[in-house]
Image (cartoon, rainbow, N blue to C red):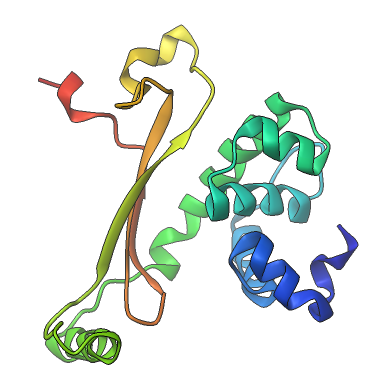
Length: 177
């Protein structure tokens, strides 16, 4: 993907990945500090596949067709890049540490909606579909409410669209009791 480093396509990139090219480059740089993303494809290409899934929730077959790679490769890439992104989460995702920082975030939300007087973050979650895990990983723990194999993901963002908290991979609680 030669256009990865070409900022002339910023709007197309943002539509495709819901991220500026500059932010994608920075993310790749931070991940690379921890070690390379392994695999047969360039790290930039693998990151784009991961970002497309995160931006749209497209199915593996759809992403496979879009990037012209086998579906199993998409699955492997998603897991590799997710692991790499998780390795930098504590460096880049930080909760407000003081009441003043919380107030600053709340002021940002108040600009969007006057009725929101003291909001410190917007919380959302989703399930990331995966292929059925091997038996050793007890696949039944990865079945979501729609009877698909998936991993739970939850995040909190501030009013500037920055992640304050993110978590991926918690098993469904009803299997634990």
